[in-house]
Amino acid sequence: ELAAIMERTAGGAPDYSVEAEGSVRHTVWTIGDAGDIAGVTSAFDRLGVIYIADGHHRSAAAARVAARLRQGDAINEADPFERFLIVSFPYTEVRILDYNRIVRDLNGLSVDEFLKKISGAFEVTPVSGAAKPDQAGQFGLYVDGAWYALKIKSMPPSDLSPAEKLDISILTRALLEPVLGIGDPRVDPRIDFVGGIRGMAELERRVDGGEWAAAFALYPTSLSDLMDVADAGQVMPPKSTWFEPKLADGLISLPLD
Image 1 (cartoon, rainbow, N blue to C red):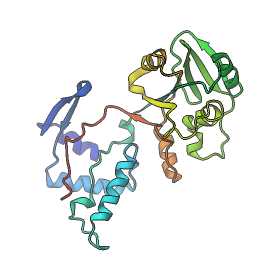
Image 2: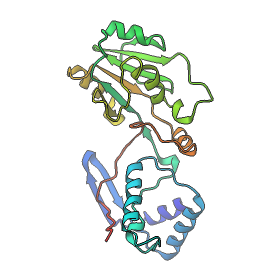
Image 3: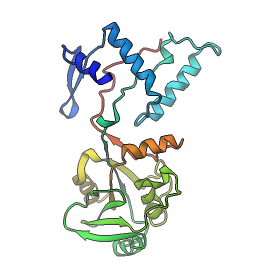
Image 4: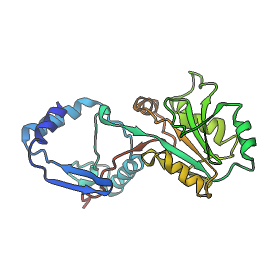
């Protein structure tokens, strides 16, 4: 029903159409027909749940703003701060890209020592080209000008939580923490993150520049995994999903007062 309304509306002239950075075109139509608005409202009422795939902090901030601006305990839905802007897609139209890691050093290990140490948890195979993972449980490693394909030897047991079964959780638990001594990636300056849209060449460039010692390429988190984590009441690990294209900030605004 929603798709039919959107397709019908998009058949007319757009209100805005602009080309932003990266040659990404942003086109906006307004649904103004009263019947269509009622149809959209009814369809969303029946959804039951919307998963936040990106923007958890912004959602939480909007809730805090509303709580601060609210007068007493009463909620007046006419107050603009009781709402916040989102963009919502059918899960069939959302693509999660990989979100890769680079590390500044090998925690005092030589390259040979590092490769030997990680071979306890991973099958380590030298490859001639970029080792881009093609399924979960596989990782690419770029170090000292060479690529290696890593495959976890033992997949996580079935009784682990959905968040603990994610590839980034496996990499953290089996390699980043015990071998490189990297704990909380949100505050550790020895790790950085590279969005998958930048490609494998960007990982090579960052390491070859000399400031970073190694790069890890990950397989993208699946939408079903993301929803499993949410259904379990858990939080996704930091920097575990990357979405492209990004919507242009400020193209549409909601004044709060």
